Length: 236
Image 1 (cartoon, rainbow, N blue to C red):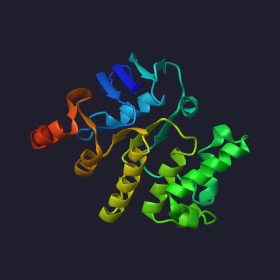
Image 2: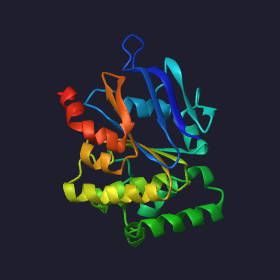
Image 3: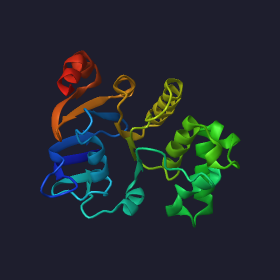
């Protein structure tokens, strides 16, 4: 069953909510992209889904389970992992130690942990090469790759990606999107926010556009592409 957001009202103060009656569905095994201008509430929506912000109204459901009252520490066990905006590695720890932190909920199960490392290193061979090196010596693209790989250590069903290409050079953006496409091929459910409109739509299955904290447009990728110029003009 999908990740569902229904009639969400949320923000950092009750007096001025950022999100107002937002509805969204991320279907299983597909890439759903949220677009919109700065300040539209895109990142706020991801934080609300993941429990960093408690909604004032509405509900978030994952696989039919209401996430009301869930905190961020509960989300991995629910099968949801979250890539925050900006870097989140621990630079003095090795690549493998950073990955291990992503699997803390199964730290007592050595077999599952070993299987997780095997799968991640097969999907990200560059990280296997550098597994004993401090994460701080990695390039910007490799650091982002490490953060994405860390999300998959517990084999979550749903990934929330907040600006995966932020701050990267164009050639590194391409490599990060190649990794996201591999996750899509592996049938992860992906809900993604990115300012790189062109690249994100290329891999999207379904697209939502937010404006001033509300649903503005939505549609399947091909239908959305036909209206993209018109929609982007509304942001200016």
